[in-house]
Length: 180
Length: 431
Figure 1 (spheres, rainbow over the protein chains, first blue to last red):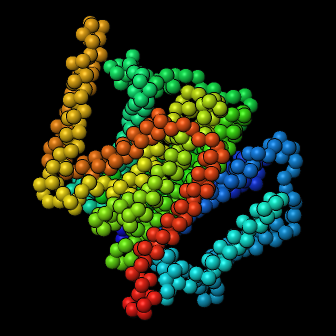
Figure 2: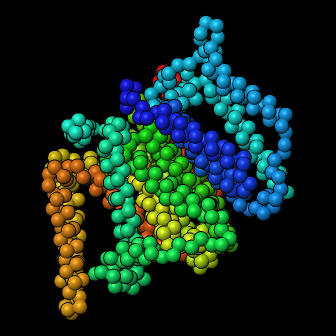
Figure 3: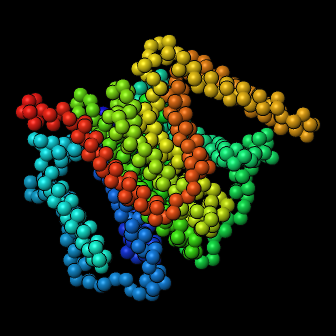
């Protein structure tokens, strides 16, 4: 497992996974049946995990599979299964907001295109470089960034994010239960 | 052609890595095929063993008709399933109904990419091995839920709901138990743990202790939590509520028949093998032989390396004993000959495993598989002896017993593991 080891068929797998992601994403919003949408979303998330693996970030890929595909989507399906499919298929599920949607799409599209734009000196707008870490060290480096006494700078942000999730969980319990 | 042979031989000769880590495509494919075939054979054997052992526990004979002692029964069953009509119910959601069994099978088989049968006998070694196994095996619940929903029928839907609630609940407790074992893997000089399946076993070798005995009784409690959670996770008795026969006909796969049903069957058994191999890797020393320290030295190494061959020879001897006991009636002539041939094959395998170059290479696989086999027997034993839990009891055990115990265990393990640092911190010593 050294850095000199060339990755196997990287462009092919990138286009494969990216294609699956795009098709899955389109199916999520075009399918009338919410269960089909959910399955398409799961496919998209799994393909995304594959792309994380290609970016030498196995820990993020694992977390993606466990949290999104294995955890959150199961609960999604759980809820969707209990609602009446016939009714949702008759109703129009979209709240049409062409203006806001269009602006958001243009903004994100411009961001993606600007990656390829170079300025007058012929340098790209965003700094780019090779991934500095070895794949076999990914998890350890994440742990260092989070918890190390000296190098750990992301501890506070992570804790704030987890606090946000905790508030959401408590809120869900409070709203769902009449008496606690 | 010469280059190819060179490529193949170079790995087999002097690589001390898994084929995936060495980047050797040929051997990776060979290992994938080996694992797939081995797993299928294991599932077939499990099918026969389960019926036989359950029968003997209930003082019955079990399958006796197809082949001697029903040995060919699984093959007959497989043929029957392939020839059966494959019904898709009228009201079913065809696409989802069609996909669901494949999700379950893919999830159950993919996890074997990282299962370490030996220091080099794994398809690949991932930096996130155990995380990958937990994640991918948790995907099988998606297949079960979609199968139950797509059938568009009452029993499957109830089964799927039960299954998803049960699997999501027990995954949490399971995660805490696994975390405590991962914490134990960081008790080395660098104070760095590992998530890699091979790394976890190497840590147990370097620390000279299986994690089940580490910080006694903490490792044992973690192992117990995992052992309960893994039965619930695979939907087996006494937690087989998703397919409770007496209440839900067959639960989530009521509407499935023929080949699709057999895919669910295959997935269930390979998922059982997968979670058992997680338990073996994390707590029971993976491929390590028993008593590596107490009975060390070349002579004991030799004795333990004879075990695989001896086991197969013993199985062959038992078979020959039963050949002698077969009825002498002319109608049983072919069956007796078949059983004798089976015994001869077993004995031949045993003799091959005794050859020095073979026995050195297979003993890791043997110890790993025999530890997993113990778990497989336990699964059958549970099914034969425990009554099924009620759903509220199941949830109570999961959320009110296993989860708090797992959390407390994780904290206590962390404190015990860091006790030297804590003492140094409080007394102002150390750094």
